[in-house]
Amino acid sequence: MSEADHDLIAAHAEVKAEIARTDTKTALLLAFVGAILAGTWTVARDVPLTVPSIVAGGAGLALLVAAAGLLLRSVRPNLSGRHGFPLWATLTAEEIPTAAAGGDLAADIAGLSQLAVAKFTCLRRAVDLTMTGGALLIVAALLTAGGVR
Image 1 (cartoon, rainbow, N blue to C red):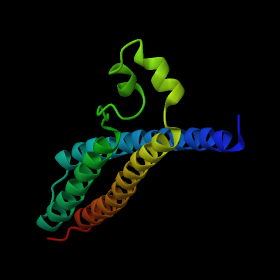
Image 2 (cartoon, rainbow, N blue to C red):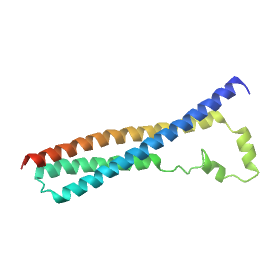
Image 3 (cartoon, rainbow, N blue to C red):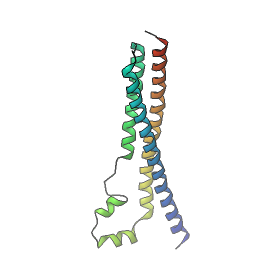
Image 4 (cartoon, rainbow, N blue to C red):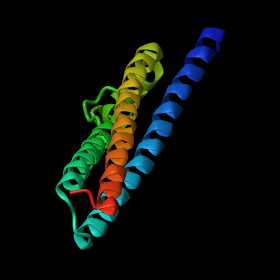
């Protein structure tokens, strides 16, 4: 195996590992956002809310729902058949050894890298929305606790 082949294999493994790390972070953030939404709903049902707190809290909840949507989009399966398992599922038993042996690893790395960047971008935007939504929920809680009408 040449040095270039070794480098391609290492790059391919690195991109796949980055996708796995991003998916793990996404799953954790999705659980966190879900817990915030559930907790907010539970608390808001039992507390008399003022108009300013409803506006701030509603905006915060809307941002959290948008963050959840981005997170779900990030982990949505890509069944186009270009990379990984879906590709193998579209091939016959005779085509699989040919595809495995003669596959263009550089093209696969490029495709997986684009997928990783798209996932990372969704995750980053979801983190920003979560932080902003959380800040608005804190403002709503302070407005409620302060009795601002």
